Length: 612
Image 1 (cartoon, rainbow, N blue to C red):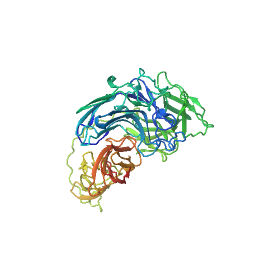
Image 2: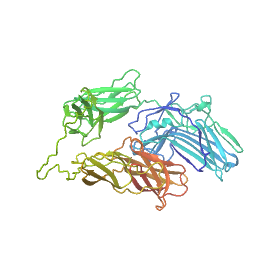
Image 3: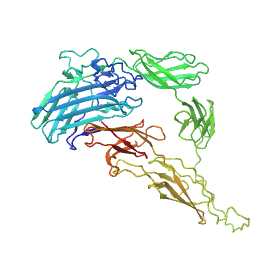
Image 4: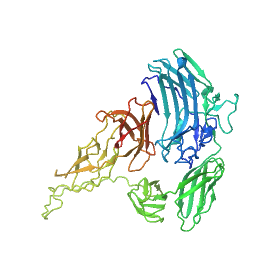
């Protein structure tokens, strides 16, 4: 949650929240990547209104790059739109004004419409001007309550955007927005057909929390309210669909999708497979089809259509690169079978599969999960199933000691067991790790040593466990943390020193450097409009790949306009698809021209900030 205020006073805050107003989100539309609808606690579903020629959609001049042609994604698509936008205002004594904006907003983390950067969030905003100066004002609206401290000019504001996370559209359900407001049917005129109201006409509404459908303010010398709101919202008629998976197994194409509809169809591809209706169980949103492939067919995508939607909605699904059909361990042999678009399939730490034939690997100890990948696609993991095996033998009681044997002198030249010979240290190659990770340094191939001592000689302080063994466990610190107060300097190489000793006390020494893999950090949007908004966002990936991490990667953003004295602007976390964003309204009052961004997993970069 990001909240921006004009005055750093504790009274400028949301005081009464409104969880549970929205309850469900529809599948992402293949037309634009945003959810097909959101549903509230009353069962009302609202869908995007994306008709530039329909005034019910509420678009203003300049909202769409070319408003003379239909909206299309991504070339002629608005930078933002609202599933519902609610507005009201109060005229204050002396010519002042308080303006309320409530919205379920769809936008992008980049300046323009860009695939893969879609976000939806719940917004609450109240802006006050020419109100009583240096006062605390209490506002109530259909979705909650808040207080604002005014400054010495009588100005103040609160902006709250809850859960803007790339691709995770369910987070908007945790906001304070909802249920959707509607025009009060007891007040003429009635709402336009297919819509909950007309955004161009102020009207009374219904649907507010605890039946409160007004906008009010109380404070020194103030007690005002209004029941007039402008609202938008197109009632959803379509259910949409989400294509969840498509894979090939034993000559069949398996397709999975979800939708509230019961009329889903997989479009055929000439010479590869036939058009096939999907099946589902009564009351279930899950749909499935298994389709026989023509000999030699190798599709890379499938298209699913929801025939009950008007216009028909579609979803395109990329076929999975690898499907693990079998991973079983019987006590001595791990059997793996996989279907892939290309071979060989590499099983990390185990070996390779050259085709769909089950492949056996003799192992004493199998992994709990296998990780598979090809040279062309992403990795996939699969749990190993145990099918048999005998119990692991318990410890064996050692035999009693025999009689002492007198010393025997061995005069063999170059005696390899000469107690004066030093150990031969052998350390396995160390794979790169990110800050905050734990790894094992493996020196078990060392010969002649009975004792080990591991210490650190350079780099940021690491934690070394089992430092007296051949396989110490090393934990790296995070590059920055949530409590960091100054930018982190680049790390010196992390070097460990090991002393290996024989039983006779003869020593050998060696050094090993831990290669550090910093996160791939990029700033994709950097803009500061003084008095309006500061917006810094981008991506943070590990090895070029996004995915959930525990704990999530922290991102710290610094005002680097004066590099000699950076000032921390804020901290955010990276979402599950690698995106992050700091958004403050109105933001700092002095123009920012440069930022320094650092992540807990080692990323560090600077970016120029655009004005306006």
